[in-house]
Length: 99
Image 1: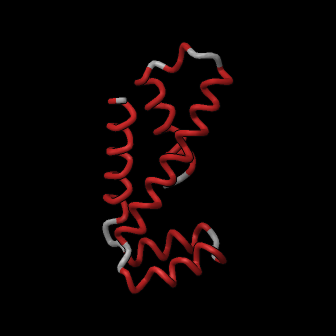
Image 2: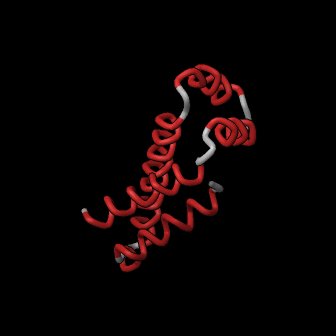
């Protein structure tokens, strides 16, 4: 998922939550916090979906590789990567909007 796509997703959640009436600095802080939480949730979903024998290789790529290498690795080893990410984001949105 691109940063722009995730950014748009977070902006939509904030809109649905009614955060548009808040001061801009508060909105910016909320957006930053939600971006971090969403990224953490996606990463946890990716780790859970990776075959256990690939975790060590994945750790090396995350540490030393580029964003493109990380995406290529995850797409190779998680055939349903888009579904994994989509599920994590849907769950994240449902949890945030229900709070």
